Length: 311
Length: 305
Image (cartoon, rainbow over all chains, first blue to last red):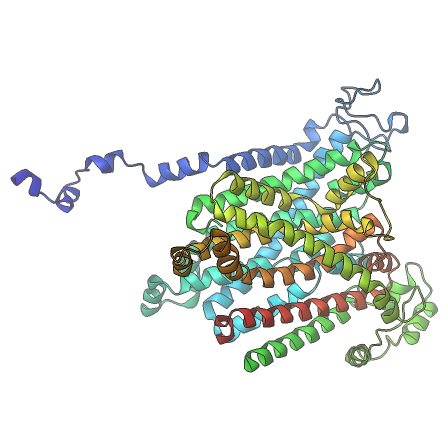
């Protein structure tokens, strides 16, 4: 009997691990298992990495100059078309001005990712500051932020963006800033409720009782605990910004020609789509895959970091 | 209930006023609206004339108050390009967009709610997986590209549906689908989550224990409660749709508010742009207000807060 009465805590103090503890995976291993076992996250992550690679090395991997117009070789169909004109020199064909479609697709990835990422950073800063303030201070601050969110939601995004861009004049920077200043609402909504939840926990009360400043509590107690929510919204909003940029460019008020943007490529091909449907299919599928992969990564990160929040 | 309604009404009016202020100042972002109207390379005298003609030379807050006063009385100014009162054109086009929005939200809801219920009844089943996959795919599909693809497949290749125009109900099928699938993912997720929560509650167990038929339990007891949050979401989504219809109306050439907005943006018709943004925002404020009231009526717990 004597050997079995040694309690677990005694063993732990002596630095001895029980069999279950040795067998149990470490938190890191658990996390790795969740990440690698999540199909959506793996698939989305892979596609996203491929597209980021395309964007980063667009200049190196493009078979042709994306801006080089040669009317002599216009509207060559892609390689999988059973046409004598199809050539491996232009695997995705050429557009109505004879520009290589694959090269334009690579460069379009740059535009989408750049605008999506920058607009997400701007809107993330605005939305996070507003949301965290509302959730942390509550009361009047909360009311004011809620009012701002309601006002922002009541204005139609695409319409306001189009109107503003048309008044200021379109450029890459204008599109980034207009989108960034418009789509902070979801950041604010999510960060507000996440902060409210963390705010009511004991360790925040403890930090307050110890006399920590608001700034210190926000940075060391609140911030680490709302980070996973922030990352998830950030991915979803980046996807949102990319879709909006494509829609603006499609309507002719986003990125201006001859810059290759996937939305603009679809707009330029619109008149020709009855005869050459692949002209809108290729950039459309690219756009769809990019947004899908970002959404999958976002959903996957939420499942992996906080499985209890899964909808 | 009355106090709750009054509070919400107060917020709604305040939001509408703030929106009107933002909409009004939209014209001034570029600096001088007279220069925007005159265009590049205009002569100084012309700009001066425009400034005086449209009253841009007066203090901004006087201009705003006058604009607001007129707007409240139904006068939204005159269109720069069409030379007619803006309000007339807008109210002529508005019904088409509302009809499109109604068709689209009906499509979205009839697709999403049954899928959400089905997914919740058998969680992690093949239905659940299929519904979730559909939601993820739907969220990633660019509206304008989806619209063009529909035209290509059902209009050009199969020749089932007319491509453009608005002469018959058939014209609204593709635009409504293109616009409406957008709301389906969010509504489906919310229905599914709500149903999962409700189905696990005590009163559903009681209803089952009483020996009620499974269908009665599911639709009469469970769905009624699960669908309450969907009302608010559907209202919000309907508002977003009216804004998003600009893309769909341009693609399908439907002569609604969205198409009008696109035309006036192309022509830099500032009063028209202002008025459309204002009208759509006000419609959104009104719809969400009504949805809140309906919600409070359906779920008394909301009234307390």
